[in-house]
Every structure is written in C-alpha cells, then in structure tokens.
Length: 113
Image 1 (spheres, rainbow, N blue to C red):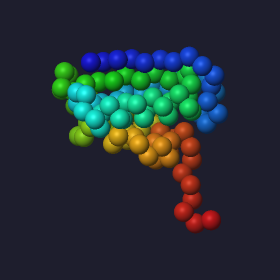
Image 2: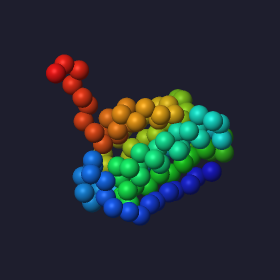
Image 3: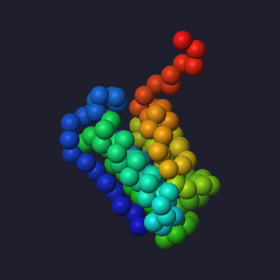
Image 4: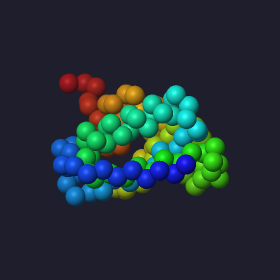
C-alpha cells in the first residue's frame, strides 16, 4: 500500500517558502500505532507545510524489501527525503514538538535559558 498524499493550501509559517517536502512513512499494516503515526504526520504537515508536502506511505507487510533501502529497523518510521539532509523519526509521532524538531521545522529549544 503505497499512497502518495499531496495537499493544497497556504504555505506554513515554520518552513522556508517554496520548498516541497518529501516524506516517506513506513508502516506495517493498519495497526493502531501505524494509523496514529499516519494521522499525526498528516496533521503536522497540514499545520506547518500546507500545500508544500508529499507523504508516501509504504506498508512493509506488502513490500518488505523496501525496508532495506532506508535501513528501517522499527515501525512506524518517517524519513524526510527532501529537503536535504535526510532525517528519520521513529514512533507514532504523537509528540508534536519532537516531530517538528526532528523534521527541522522548528529549532531545538535550549535547555538552559
């Protein structure tokens, strides 16, 4: 089940204007954790990259060989392919701040202020 997803809308304020973000989300079937990751990733992209992102969902139950290409060891895993550099986040993506920092949509906050 490979499902590209593109959206239309106004550009988000967090990322550089004009960039198209290419994300690949690796899942295993329709487990609750994988469904949550898909929903959470789409929500974050709509809020911060509206109209400027593409998500490809790869079901490793249907295409297990694809896991080797991006060295997937756990699911769900999202890979940011563009813009470079490649970034990887593992988990259900429910921690929005962690996702934003991991995808480099928001700078990491300093622990000491």
